[in-house]
Structures are given as C-alpha cells and as structure tokens.
Length: 320
Ligand SMILES: [Zn+2]
Image 1 (tube, rainbow, N blue to C red):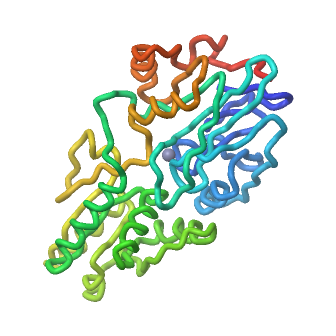
Image 2: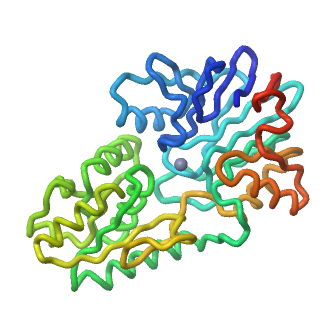
Image 3: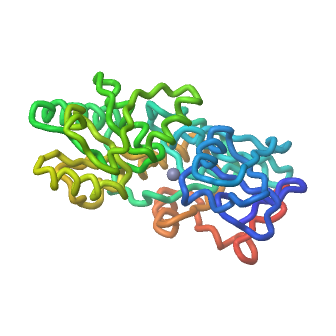
C-alpha cells in the first residue's frame, strides 16, 4: 500500500516498487521492509540508529516532507506514527505498532484527531486484556527477589525494545543484569539517545563461568535461550527461567514463569485510541485485520480491512 502525499508515494513499513519514499515506523524487523541499500527512509533518528546497528550499509533518514509529521507511538524507543495532511481527505494517520500505556524506555504516545485512520491489528479480540504495566513490572520484581537466594533468573526476550525494558525493571530494583551481545549492542543505542541502562555483558551466550552465577538476572535474546540453558545444565547448575511478552496472555511458554508484558495495544486500548482520534473511517492492517475491523464495526465504527475501498491492489490514491 502506498500513500500519495504531494509528489511523494510513501510506503508504510513495507517494500513497494512504486514508492519513492519508505516510511519505517520503528526498528522491529517486521516493519523494516522499506529499508534498502542506497534508498532514503522516512523515520526518526533513533529508528535509523537502531536499524543501522543491524545493517552493514549506511542508512540515510530524509527530512520530513511538507504535509507530513511523525508522532510518537509509545511502542518502543523512536517508534513513530505517520500523519499526513490532505486537501481532499483531511488528516490521515497510520499507527504502525502502538500502545496507550507508558513504557519506562519509550516516549509516550501522541494521539491526534484524524479523518482517516490506518491502524495496526496485533490484538484484535476483546477477550485479550493486558493488565496495568506497573502491576506486571512489580510482579516481575517480586519474582526475581523471591528467587535471589536460591539462584539466577534467566529471561528470554526480544533483543530490541523488550530487553531494554527488562534491564530498566532490573535497574529499578538495584540490579544490573547480565545480557548477551545482541542486547548490549541495542542497549548502547538506547544509552546514546538518553535512556540510561546499567547492564553487564560478558558473552554469556558463548559460555558461562562460576562468576556469572553471582548475577541474579540474566537476559538473553530468544534464540540464545536454549543455548544458555544447555551451558547451565552441563555445569550441573539450576536456574529459573522466564519470558515477558504480550503473547504470554494467549499461549504457554516452556519456562518456569511467564509475564504478559506487552508493548502493543489490546482491544480496550485500541478503543481508547480511536475514541481520542475520532476518525470518520478506519482501515485495519496486519495479522488479525479482518477480525479487528469486524469487532470495530460491532462498536459502531466505519471500519474495513485494507485492500477494500482503496482501488486496485489496495493502493491508497490521491490523498493530497
Ligand atoms: Zn514492533
């Protein structure tokens, strides 16, 4: 899908052949399809640095064009929504991933009134309800404290966004966690942009020493979790295991404990967002978009999935 704004044809978190400007809402890999060699991207400076940390060739972020503004989405550090002004259609907002609750390591969401809203659909069902983040974070701290005398707690985490939040939660209880190299690299970018995080990095994914067991919390990328578990098991030691993700509200993980700490809006938060945005029409996007549109219609909104009402190939035309 491409948004036409003046002379720009802006892709939204995807690679589109007809686009001449690629908007990247945030640095998670399922939203960086528009990043390619020798092409400018429209994103925040922080997102550019986070994507650059995982990209070999140099990336350039363009100046924000006239008629376009970027608004914080609350999802992770640097994450933005795109807002475009159009003479014919008024204001259009595309959210990307977003949340209404405040994360300790991300900017608070900005909600602007819009005529047309294109909204992410990660949690489209009313029966998935996330608890208050403060309460989930307090539960995590209680769990870690309760295990400190008996061993370490190993968290498996997405290395970008969630891991930094876990470090911040540990720092809040006076603990500097041990992290793997992936997480340290991304956390360095967070520090560069003013998010102070204290952590230790000794290459825990490559091997573990007796000294490492003195650190009460270890945080590793999801793909390193089994590797670390095997190192621990070969040493004949025991650790406690945990994950923190919104998907913990829907599925069981192979860990001692799981916490439903999400950086996305649940359905209730989506309704709160839409109420503040008060759009005339809504287009849902992403996995679950059909269910999300149906559930929004049940609440009285003019909602449909992208690909209908946009002309051929779902292209959003002539909006400026
Ligand atoms: Zn994301």
